[in-house]
Length: 280
Length: 306
Image 1 (cartoon, each protein chain N blue to C red):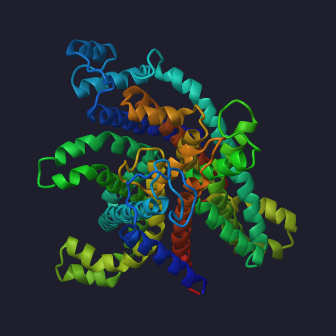
Image 2 (cartoon, chains in turn blue, brown):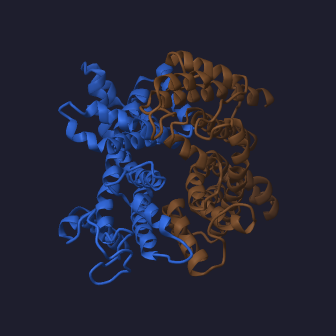
């Protein structure tokens, strides 16, 4: 019952983010005279400083936040799984060196380095993409960097988990048989071993998805993530927080982004929690 | 033990140095110059500025020069905050961030551990389930969501606490609570699972069977292994509080090291960014070292020599 409710609200948030911007009569950046209007029938969640409809902006923001979360988590999955597979399967000195590298990265302020990377290479990537066939992507350079950067923050734990699994799986008879019939290492890794670790990897995805969404919002909140004219839940929250002052507090500009972000993270964390609990 | 600590310390130094060189290179490679402003500089001035700050020559030359300076304890001058050295800026702002971070660290542990112990004592009952829900909730409300909402509630809707600033103890209340709360749940969960796992272990049953008093059993035998997961979490916790502090300093206008880092990145202030990253790195390596050391003390199965 509880589970059904949780899944229903998640579907609702995702569907609203995907379809909402088309259904809404307002657009992302169209300004109006109704500045900082409190929630009403025409603007369900009120308007922001420039009279833009907050609900519409939240739905657009949801698209970006969820997209960054999904792609970032996928990047971390690809990197982490490949790294863990290779390290675990090769074993010995290679494994040792690869895991030492992971240990070192663990001890570093990775998100800080991602901030440096993203902020500084935004323009460079834009210049690189401009003039090539990928020039349409140039305006989204920041977003691409976010995908990669956040994916690269999150892969470490996954690599460790996969490696530990592979260490035991590679001793099983079917791997030996595969080697005996002459399958190459890549084939064994991706055709034989990968399917065995996939359930654990997918379970872990439910943990890295909210983590990446959180990090994206964190960066955007600081003004280092998604840039205008795009918006994400993090930038909307930052915009709202910047409006707070003792004379007039447009509470809706803070409360609604905060609620939506917290609710989404809560749902995803809860799902991950349930999946990771041993089956009764 | 001391040799282990020394060896670990020595092996972390190259890592930290490597990180700042990478960081230095990243900032230098990035488009945009730290000296650019609205007014375009003429090339001669630009060149003079670059040579004055040691930014002339090829990139390997520059980074070697910087590395040499760092090893001599000179982190360079800030390029944006003219006339101030990076060491000065760090010296002024780091204590503030450290004070805030330590309060949050203690708060997270001080609230999380008793809550977790309490839940473990009520394993499976309603209170335990509520606590699990609470832990999940705090986990899902990040610092930057909590902070603006807390300001809205406790500074503007109910004018109880100052919304921003630095200097009085009262101004510390909201920031430190907002910084700590997301981690209370994690600490509580770790304590709970650690305790439950230990209490159910064979050696505790044996102790009980041979008549060790319940108090000795818990304090002398169970406590040590039970806090192990918590100690291992100390490193990641310190890291999360460091990054969380970036947001908290932004929201509460606290002139801490995080504010300087963010403005440094925006301004291509190469020495400031590398210097702050170095500090962050050293802090984290230090915390991980302490955590490893404590783990080794608490867990006799871990052999430090190997």
